[in-house]
Length: 283
Image 1 (cartoon, one colour):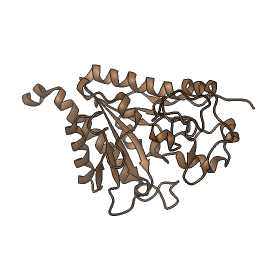
Image 2 (cartoon, helix red, strand yellow):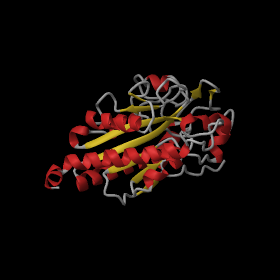
Image 3 (cartoon, helix red, strand yellow):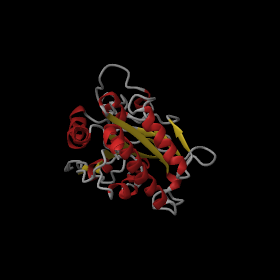
Image 4 (spheres, one colour):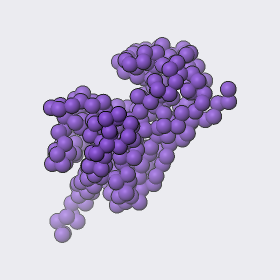
């Protein structure tokens, strides 16, 4: 079968005065025929790995002129929010020595291998050559774009913030509907994370921090608060913005979109204010 390359990420350059970059790694919906042919249960078993419509939910934030890196390749093919070492030995041929980590052992590694609902996803293991192709086509361009744009924002403004946008299965009341993650203080300044929590709660959204999601590889890899680059993961309960079927926009879609834009604007301006305190004093 002809193997068409995985689509590269969508990259939008910043047109804003805010030092904020959006990351959306799990929104890809372009499934090549060769990937579907390898799936035991076809498309229906792969779609649940997506964060549905998070890329569209970010439209108001993108409307502020913020830069964005958005995956087009599906998470089922390669997960940009995993370390290259998180290789499930049940799905990657000849994995490297060492412990792949709990997520890979649970089936959700660099290439997802199984889900609780559908079990084993693939008809055969992924060869190392095929894994390298997927990394070159979709994964490495994604992380290269994040690193380059964050470095540019920091050089221009003195600091930068990465907002890594995700969704989570419905949690229901009274559990928090939004979970912020900063790798327990390693990827983002504590004050900035606290401002994010307050912003969400002031907008009417119950919010938790680092529980049950503390952030994945993207914020771990790119967040260096001691060097002025902050990275914060945000998980939104899908029932906040999707319909009952959890695949199409629901009545709360616009409110959730406004929240992302408010977060970006509030956190970005606060970060600018810390970089230019003399300008604030002069005003």
